Image (cartoon, rainbow, N blue to C red; front, side, top):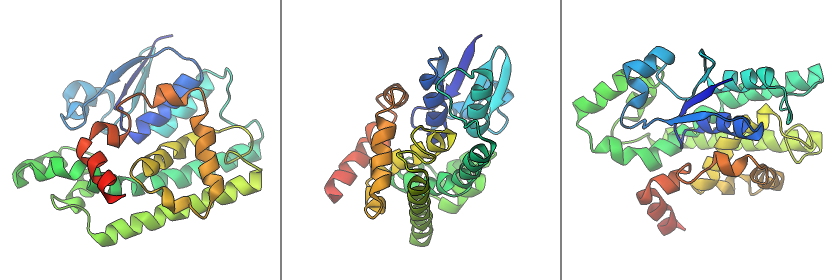
Length: 256
């Protein structure tokens, strides 16, 4: 049963899917797309994923898109351990509610500081015409990119994103407390943990870990996620923004 994953190393949605595949010990061919080069907008890729985003999973010719959908698909088709979906229907509903919150609140919120800190220099180097053409070519990201422009998101947008990330951390802490931890729903991770994992790892990478200073359970949760065997192969070298962009690493180091 052939599995092919089209993804990008630093893509938070790609990291979710890589974790599930690695955790289940599934062999897969990995195609790493260069998003700045526009690989995700080339005709061959758009034929697979008309949204022009990563990741895309191809399984024996069947094309599955959207990271949350892919994770549940892999869980259903490959039910071998470890299992990431609770057997109890109520717990399963709770997991999906958490996943919905994660997709609607922290997943888009983390893009704002990520773009301002890491990606903005790339856009600033473009002409206005080239920038608008690039934004117009992205089916799901056009309005997001145009609102950022070539000067970056304003402070009000940054503040709102940080507020949403703080809300996420507080909700995680509440879930961990209710379940007994160390994960959101108890002693083992579920798809909800894997869904929020890239957000928290990204926050730690770009020096936003102070947002859980009052919630030590979230720091312990991050330690527990990093201790999972699938973490290291998922976050291979180049998967973190500070590994990909030397200017960001220098900028953050100077701010410490």
